Amino acid sequence: MDPIAAKIDKYLEEQSSLDLLRFITCGSVDDGKSTLIGRMLYEAQLIFEDQVAALTNESKRHGTQGGDIDFALLVDGLAAEREQGITIDVAYRFFATDHRKFIVADTPGHEQYTRNMATGASTAEVAVILVDAKAGVLTQTRRHSFICSLLGIRHVALAVNKMDLVDFDQQIYDGIVSDYEAFAEQLSFERITAIPMSALEGDNVVGRSAKTPWYSGPTLMGYLETVDAHRSLVDESFRMPVQWVNRPDRTFRGFSGTVVSGKVAAGEEVRVLPSGEVATVEEIILHKETLPEAITDQAVTITLDKEVDCSRGDVIVAAKDPSEVADQFEVNLVWMDQEPGHQGRSYLLKTSTTRIGAKLTDIKYKYNVNTFEHLSSKAFELNDIGVATLSVDRGIPFEPYGGNRSLGSCVLVDRYTNATVAAGMINFALRRSQNVHQQKLTVNKAAREALNGHRARVLWFTGLSGAGKSTIADALEQNLHKRGIRTYVLDGDNVRHGLNQDLGFSDGDRIENIRRVSEVAKLMVDAGLMVLTSFISPFRAERDMARRMLGAGDFVEIFVDTPLEVAESRDVKGLYAKARRGELPNFTGVDSAYEAPENPEVHLRSGEDSIETCVRQIVDYLDLD
Image 1 (cartoon, rainbow, N blue to C red):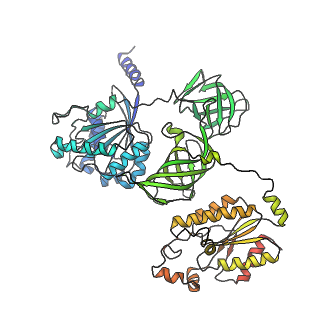
Image 2: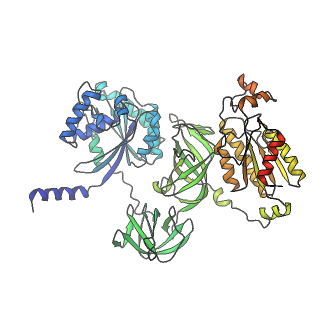
Image 3: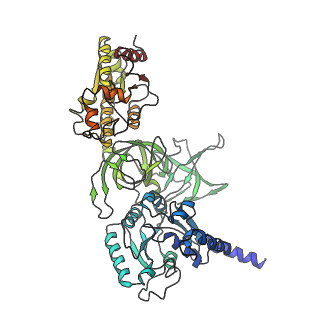
């Protein structure tokens, strides 16, 4: 064999046998994360000569080192990053040494991009948390550490960087390490390894520095090459989320996915969740090869000995040790959106394979990342971290995040923009989700409608204050009453005297107001009544929530459309005048937004038409004549 080819084959074989470590660099702005990664690649001779030449040229144009090589430019690839001198996006780099292969995520330090940092940490096994020796432990250092802990990272290298700027003073180093370790006592890290270094000059990055004779620990590269951070899930119970039902023809039906824990062999019994059906594994297929068993991290196709109800989003598990199935959870949330997350608001929840409706039912508390104090709140703001409860439309299989990242992680998605608003880690199912069940009753909605002699519906009036909602609803109820239709009006002011007297007019309280009214309206429709709700209900998301809750055809949205100046001119309660004087904060139309319906079933022009004309328009829509 050609000696060169033999060397290449030997090298490739050696590389294929190395294990892989995923790690993240994080910390506050300008702590030197990108510079560190660039220095590591350069010192370990892991970049090519043409890359060094390009880096030298780029350093002269965009660098911050006065013409010297700026190693941060190796990973700061975006033009905006180079212009501002900060990392914005997550930059992933692959490299290898003789001892290990690595995937490093260089994450932004700026608070605005905390969501990007959380994304990078979600797949990491080790965190390299940088601290500027001159600045010490900052709030963003604490926030990033907290997120790493929440996301299951257990091994941390505390890189006290820029020691060259403090003359490699051991006392300064010891003070920073002491501060950080005191803070981290309440986190779930297993081990913190502190390293004094200078990423810019290379001290203790790859080679040991003569400038720190008082330090006897590992270099950063030495630490990364030897840290034992792998947590094997092979010995855990078998779990495989189904990503695809493989049906190339009518003779074959397999279930494809990646084994996220445990192992399974042909002939073993498995259970499909959430249906609970039990079957036996017939074959395990990897491309064209049949395997005797599949283990953690293998992507395979499994065939079963019988037809079962199984589709994408289901999970195939060990029959004797299945996962839990629940529809309500306590979760840790990292809020990632500029738009606040309000208690009671609906979202879409995405897991590794499932997309399902979800509601933020309760915000238990937010964390003060400096003191770990629990702060009461009804809303999450950008970069907030806290604990909440979620309810989903149906039961889904899950594992607590601490035991299985794949089945314990989720994201919340805005229903309208499709933006990811939060990353979630499931702690446990709520007990009430297992203890409370829907009671089936003999007399149902259809029977009550038959007795009443008319269909039950919700007529949902929405519009600005002063648009005429209550007046039109009252006139319509009189019309319906004369026709023998059993009705009830849920009026905004009246409900706030009783059921919702504890709520104010903040966005969160408005959302909860509509949620409660929707639940009451749903019960009244089930009782066979024609329900008229008269509420400003300013947010489209909550009106759509009520529509989904009530079902197709039972929700009639009636937009009482009146120009703001007309509504304000009526102002029989003097509310607009008070709002203009600043005496009524969060008043819709003045300092709080109103989101008009896009496609209401009935669109009334109450600023132009009479009450009688508006009532006739609704009656015509209901087809009551």
